[in-house]
Amino acid sequence: MSTTRFRVTDIFTRDEIRDLTAKSDLAGWWAVLSTWGIIAGTFAVMALWPNPATILLGLIVLGGRQLALSILMHEAAHYSLFKTRALNNVVGDWFCARLVWNDVARYRQHHVQHHSHTNSELDPDLSLVAPFPTSRASLRRKFVRDLTGATGLKRLLGLALMDIGALTYTVSGGARRRPRDGRRWTDYAREGIRNMAGVVIANLVLAGLLAASGHAWLYLVWFAAYMTTYSLFVRIRALAEHACTEYSDHPLRNTRTTRAGFLARLTVAPIHVNYHLEHHLLPSVPYHHLPRMHALVKARTGMDDAPDYLDVLRLVSAKPATA
Image: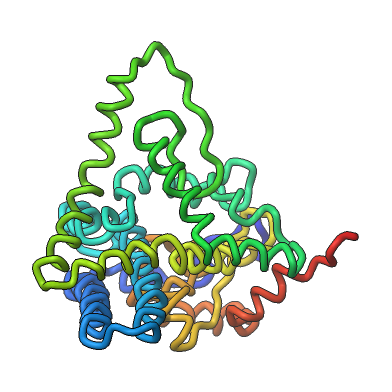
C-alpha cells in the first residue's frame, strides 16, 4: 500500500467501518464511572490507612486516572465517548477535562490539526516527539523533572497564560505569544475568568467533597499526583504514540500501537489509548472497539507485533550521549 493511494477501505469493508464506529452510551458511562470509581477507591484506601505506602500508591493510581480523564476528554472531543454531542460536551467537560485543567472545545479545535497533519511541520503536537531519539541521560533528566514537579510548574504557568490569552492554546510545548492587539488587563482578566471558571468550580467541588468526608488533605495528594506522576505518564504516553516513527502521511507508519499490560493500563495506557495506530486510521472509532480493530489490522496488513512501553523507552533513548 503506497502512501498516496492508502485508503481505510484497503483494510476494512464499509460494513466493518459502520460497526467499528458505532457509539455506545453504556460504554461511555462505564468508562467515566469506572474511572471515578477507582479514584474514589484510592481516596478511601488512603483515608482508612494513611501511611507513606498508601500515599505513594495513591500518587501512582491518581496520576494514571488523571491521564484517564484526559483520554476521556480526547474521546469526547472526537464525539466518540457518547452518542450525542451534548453528552460528549457536557460529561467530557465537567466530569473529565475540567479536573485536569482543560476543556473539550479548545482541545477539539487543537486536536483536529494533529490528525490532519500528523508528523508534519504543521502538526501542533510535533514538539512532543521531535527531540527523539535522545540519550538515556537526557530522558532520565526529563523523568526527574516530571517527578520533582518542575514539569508540572511549567505546565501550570503555561495553562494560566493560555487561559488569559497571553499565549496561544496548545496541549504540547508549542505555545506562542499572542499579539496584544490593543487588549487591556481587563480583557485578559475576562478571558481568564471565562476559561478558568470551570476548572476552579470542578476542583472546588472535588475538594469540597473530600473535606465533607473529613479528609480534606486528600486533595493535596490529588494535586501532588497532577504535578508529578501525571506529568510522567503524559510524557511516556506521547512518546509511545509518535516518537521515532516515520515523518510521512502514511497512517501505518507515522504512529504506533503499543502493547499494554496491567501496570501500563493503570498508568500510561488507560482507556485503550495504546491502540494509537488504529485511532489514527479511524479517529471516530470508540475506545471499546479498538482491540477488535487492532486484530483486524494486524491480520490484514502483516503488521509486526506491537512493542511494549519498555521497548519504546529503549528506542527513544538509543542516541549515544555526547561528550
